[in-house]
Image 1: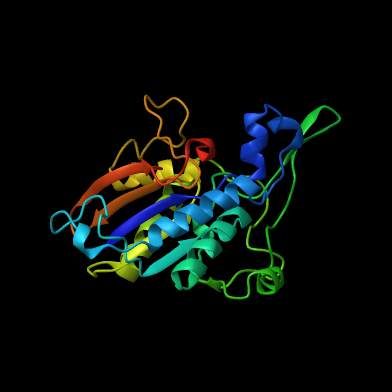
Image 2: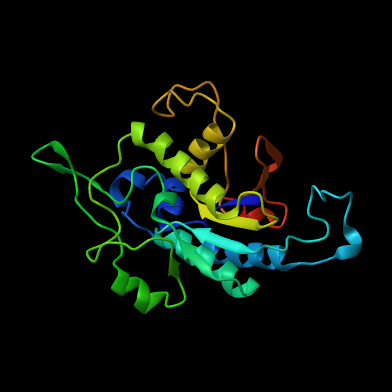
Length: 248
């Protein structure tokens, strides 16, 4: 199984982070910016390319011959769904959403009430909303009628176990196959997936305090290959298909 991990395009929150206004204007489930849409469109074109004569070796480690994706998954956060929709529409492949692929923390906002920090209780998009706005989106598992997120903020110890569930799901669906699978997820959560796949500090509950940091740009592309006993990393955070002004 070839695995391609993709971070979603630039979101509203990503943009305000760059402008140092994150704490005051952050939203719980942001959409893509116009720049994020451009990034996703360029990535979709890159993934759609095919050039059989360009293959370099049987593994084609840089995808010179193209990608030939067979499956596309995404998280249920809207920025990932939007990115995945652009890609799946261009490739003509169904888009499947899995609720465990979301960003760390989940759907929440921090608010000060009487000078005390309060975490809002939100539930994410409902099946009705998804059906109306993304009618071709498929769900890997059913979600609650009031929204896919249980509410509150995800605790750090749960993130490693969730990364394990995502990897196990992918192995169950595509292990020991020639499938080429793209997963549109999120920057911070990808670092947990990476740690689990390479057995890095998996007993450490969070990410702060680790002596390394894994960067994934918006629409950055990482290729791995999984077999029964090994994980091979071909490249990490590839963005050469984007112009300089769209690197975020």
